[in-house]
Length: 126
Image 1 (tube, helix red, strand yellow):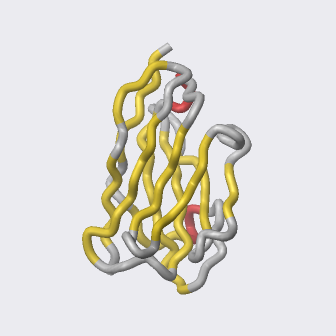
Image 2: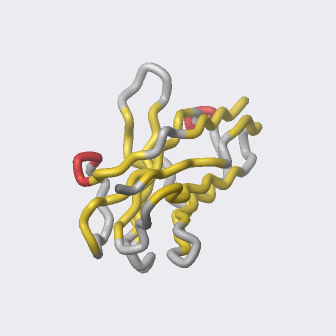
């Protein structure tokens, strides 16, 4: 079992930056692909970014490409989401997720992920 805890959310002005972190409070995800997803008020949860188990392969939603960067430090059992040039439409609860299968390459599909964190709120003011 892997338990994930997100941190780093908060309130930021449009154009600002935030870095989210996701750490394992129990277990390890060093051999799992990881993903970030977000859910805005009244909307479904959407894919944001994913990273392969070694970190060599990443993929992003078109809406965040060029502004967000996903990375990981397997020694620290932590995955990050660096968010730059934030927009009000980035306001959402952000979730990290771990693929439950070893040596994954990452996926935008929520059904691929076995473990989920509780989420961290990001609010971008205009």
